[in-house]
Amino acid sequence: MLKLYDKEVRSRLLLGTARYPSPAILAEAVRRAKAEIVTVSLRRETAGGKAGGAFFELIHALGVHVLPNTAGCHSVQEAVLTAKMAREVFRTDWIKLEVIGHHDTLQPDVFGLVEAARILTGEGFQVFPYTTDDLVVAEKLIEAGCRVLMPWCAPIGSAMGPVNPMALRTFRAHFPDVPLIVDAGIGRPSHAAGVMELGYDAVLLNTAVAGAGDPAAMAEAFALAIDAGRLAHAAVPLEPRDMAVPSTPVIGKAVFS
Amino acid sequence: MRVLVKGAGVAGLTVAWQLYRHGFDVTITERAEKVGLGASGFAGGMLAPWCERESAEEPVLMLGRSAADWWEAAVPGHVSRRGTLVVAAGRDAGELDRFARRTSGWEWLDAAAIAELEPDLAGRFPKALFFRQEAHLDPQRALSALTAGLEEARMRFLFGADGTQDAARYDRVVDCTGAARIGVLPDLRGVRGEMLYVETPEINLSRPVRLLHPRHPIYVVPRGRNRFMVGATMIESADGGGITARSLMELLNAAYTLHPAFGEARLTETGAGIRPAYPDNLPRVSEHDGTLHVNGLYRHGFLLAPAMAAEVARRLLAEQARPERRAS
Image (cartoon, rainbow over all chains, first blue to last red; front, side, top):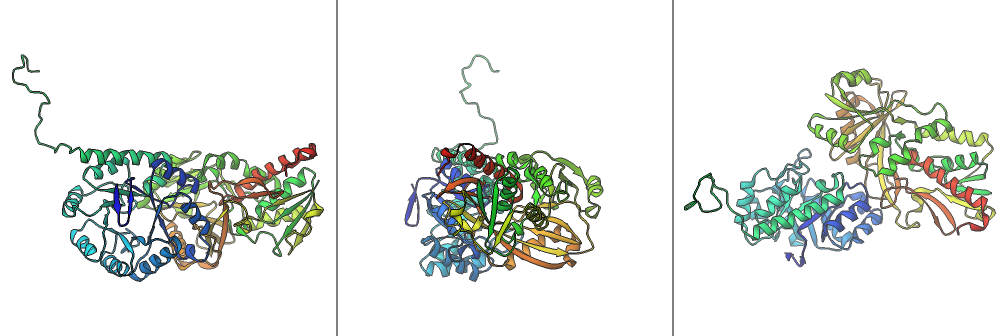
């Protein structure tokens, strides 16, 4: 089981809920992936009164944990305000914290992120910070009260997969006891399997599933890959070597071929 | 059979026209003082089922491919069959390949072919997808023309009335009031859409152009007289308030990316409408509390209303033939 603050889940796949062809297809994707956590972005006009009510009811009807997020927030103040509105709407202390530095690249503003995390944990939120693979920033986030870290493996929506596996390895080694969720940059199930093999605890996805030709089938493919990667990590994979090594002993063989 | 059609948006007027063609005695009520003041008035008016297939399911293409013919027959001269051009900015070029993989009915154009089709876009995009079979219309004018046709046919219009008191005087009520039924019809929700109009004499486009973007795809539809509609956001919300600064910025940014001359255009109008949608984002004709409902047209009002109207007519004709089997 994966323990994230006060909740335990079996599934290692967190699904975003944006840009599916329809809510019905989103629901099917969640079902086939056996996802237990979905992340939902809150915009101001959505939060206003009962305006977004119908969509949020559909989300609640999925019967999974909701991790609201502050996607699209560009300042500490905006992220904190959005987090508070999300707490009202979804009645949860969980918040996936995003403070975006570039409108263009969606690179996190790590300074604002740490500041917002400090404010929110002070107000009782359980913060899931979307961050880079920078170790020092991650340490500051832990100091600020975060008990989960969500490093990217490539820019949001880029679908490139891990662009710096070395950094991800170091990150994992540096925080052996903190639940680590790779958030952003995953494009294919093989990418997800790869980061799970490195020992990550879970993967958060949106575009890779929502933008697939068959989102529900892709969600299931990711769930399978994530399970495979996790199983492989637990089974201790071989480390690569420079030389070929025969898989059976060669001494005593009559013929070398 | 005396039929009351509630709502004079694209759904109501289309249903009324179809029923009139089948000889039903039809009355239309509309809460507002004129037609098309709901989501229909903010529509792009694109009859583009092949493009829509990128994010919509198969029925949208199946039900929508004959929409242009339906509109041409109902309001002759209002349908412009010049196809749809789909482009992407350089850094989003991958989006074009993705769009192509998910759709059909297109051909690739190179820079020269784009320049031939839309001279003002010459040199701006290395390649584009062209959906030759698609069409578009001006929603406001098409609805006005349809209304004029219905009035000429002596159809009764009751404005400023919701028709509830009179319902008993009719054999059948068809509710086409769209977003007004959110919270009443099970599973119906609102998806907010914002749009704007700009005016500039510096650009000529002769067909809708879609600019792909991973987060903010937009379309620009030429409306004649130097006017262009730029739309539309898709926000899971039933908030009908004015356009937000953020959406305005995103739409204008995208228009500017399509052509820098849009930077000098005059902003003449902004608007926001609520698209009614079911969880599968497909429209349906359903029976609820003794009334027939046409709803959930989502972003496909002009595209799919004809198919829904045909379904309503099919049901009422069947009831007329066998009145004892009327569903209730």
